[in-house]
Image (cartoon, rainbow, N blue to C red; front, top):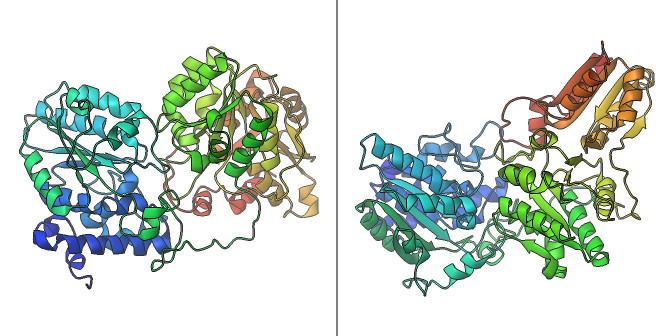
Length: 594
């Protein structure tokens, strides 16, 4: 069928004019549109394909945007965006200055709440529902769609627990597809799998026990049944819970069969579904694989090593250890707080826990880092993935705050490798039995620069920096992998200017190499710090503090890093360019300080 129905739908008002018998055709066109877009522009595929029918039914039955609708996690919301006055802009999704890949309140009145991280929808929707009642509004509907394993997170249960003792007008819809990015894990998954379409889970119902009006499970791809059930629930006051069963990747054979790979597959052939090979001459490994393969190598030699990740075994590459040593590697689901304290408990028993979490998600476990790990000075090894700007996922996913929020915590060591070999060697160093403090190891998303990285292990001395080149006039202090890029930039200067530039990679933000810094501040009056963390409280701030504490007066210190604002989405290069942290911007700063 030609795409005629979707062409006439700009928003839910238009959708509600369509005959219910024609809605399956709208669903087909929506699927084709999303497949066409992601095939060429990239993005999240499987999750949005799995909720096409649900998206149509929700906007068909409820009076959005007056009725609030929250998508959790937000990467399910592509069809929602197309149906809510953004179809003509959808080609800009995740592009610089274009639509966000997640719901965003400033983008549309239909986006009731921003959801880049998981498991927030029930609390937010409950807050909206309680606010409506306080204001005397008893008719507005508040819907939280929670899927992709988000229901298993502690915050979701906190929301359910509170909602169950209120009379708030709240509908929670569980999109049960047995998947996050990786397969769902845990006892709750096993409980839900016992519930079949048309038949509740046996041995009582835990949702009903929390005072929710429970219905389901029903087929989440059956539009007439969805609409009928939503119409019924719309008339019921109080807390309601609808359990639907869907298939992630529905409508694209490969996406249904290989759900992990097609969560965000990159570019692919929209006709065959085959993923297109990426054109790259860089044969160096991803930092994630350096972590995963090195950890497996070490774990085979050291039986005290355990690996932990909250729902990111593939993304973090802990999958290698999970596949080879499943009794010592654990995916704990979307549960960052639990992951950190689980690691702390293991550390008390003499194990060596490597807890790998994306920088942006480690924010969710801040209390556990302080209270459960640092205060007790337990030698937990935090492997902080996706540090720095991550590109098109945008503000909710950039890992640009970790140095700042970790640096103020006593007992905590902060390390950032300059390259793959540094990462490999620090993973080796921390398991030698000499580690007396917790340590964080931050590294970026994507590929490094060294093909031959699996070199013999070398111990890295804690708190010691590295002199990369001597100079006469200006000292550049860097931290992390940006140091390699800075070295390349320095090499582009004329020889007469190059001789003036000294470059030091500190490796450790905490403890700083005070001996090295003493020599730098004694010799140089002009100092430039460069990092991929926010400049507020980051590495540069630590250098300024060192200068003040050690009475190095009259020094000209310039800090370069992420500015004090939320960086939106775009390619990593575009974002770096926008904040003058690309090669040209850094070169200009070096010229200015020269």
